[in-house]
Amino acid sequence: MHQPARSVPFIITMEACERFSYYGLVSILMLYLQKELKLGEAHAKEVVHLFKTGVYFLPILGGFLADRWLGRYRTILFLSVFYCLGHGWIAITDASKDGLLTGLALIALGAGGIKPCVSAFVGDQYGPGANDKLSRVYGLFYASINFGAMFGFALIPWTRDHHGYRWAFAIPGLFMGIAAAVFWAGSRAYTRVPVAPPDPSASGTADLATVGRIALILSPVPVFWALFDQINTSWVTQGSAMTPFEVLGFRFDAERIQSVSALLVLIWVPILTFGLYPWANRRGWNLTPLKRMGAGFVFASISFVICAWLQSRINAGETLSLQWQLLPYVVLELGEVLVSATGLEFAYGQAPARYRGLVMSLWLVCTALGNFLVAVITRINSTFIHASGTGEFLFYAAFILVAAIAFTLIARSVSANRPAST
Image 1 (cartoon, helix red, strand yellow):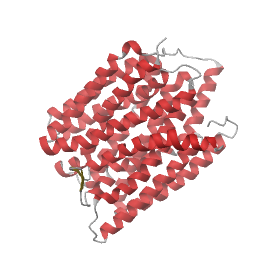
Image 2 (spheres, rainbow, N blue to C red):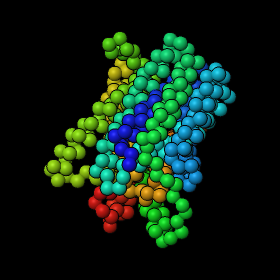
Image 3 (spheres, helix red, strand yellow):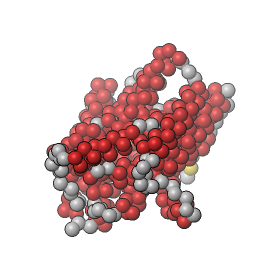
Image 4 (cartoon, helix red, strand yellow):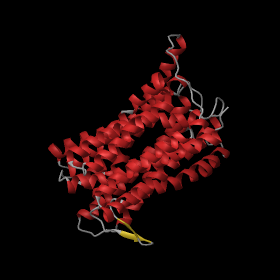
């Protein structure tokens, strides 16, 4: 019997390195497209969000391969090759437009394909009856994601400033290679759930009904990601109109401040997991996963209202320090932990065992749909409406409030006759 204490550290380390790779690339992508490739703000924003759409839509492929053919372990190793090739192609083509787009496509295939497998694989290390441990392990897993993201956001823009774009695009590829090597090194420690054969029985039908119920509950979640992932686009554009600041000699500009996003998650996860949630439970307040997720929607809306306020001051001619952007970051990241870390726990815990790869894929597709939604809205706005930054921020703030109401109504309706854990 494999022990989670032996296997989980390999998966957590692999995830941290992979997230450094991904977010290191994303940290410099918006301004590179906008300023180096001269695509313009709206077109650059579309490209970034369409790339992220691919990253978060292709988990369907990864989940299918894992659930029906290769298993999660082999799927992760196989698709990691495409991930590394994508980074390498961008570096050797000097991030020309065609080279960059080809590399992004390969990265989307690799990153998207392995995402549902890794998040389900970490849960596989715990046997039946270990649901009480899933909350903590997914909190740790989510912390590793943000640990890697924090250093990716902080160090890759620094590398670009001191060594140029070639090294800035190459180093994330190196870290993806390290991620694959670390994952392979833990092979003997893993618990590997075998591929389930097709099940034509009634229980299979019941499992699909459960998957459908989960998908319905998650249907408003793309709107959350439509807001959140704009920290890599709209928030970077807003930050570029603000004055950078320094902390202990480290300069925070519009790109490097994205590292604050991950740092705040590392702060919020233990506060909520070991502080607020146990405190609330001791007082009989049942903070179920769905209640936490609904609250996260509201905090995202508040953060965009703050951004709209900051943008109105910039538009009025004020010179603002980038430190002001820390305020919406604090609020948004509280929302992210409430939605994303909780969503992972909910999706894995509610999914039928033989469809866990599919359900984790559905969770990630929510992010894909959110990014696609931003790309469509951006195209419509730039072509027909021409709304200002302030107007855009307020639109998204109102949009997610509507989604929060829909999420609450759907969750109550679908979960009316379900156990209290949902």
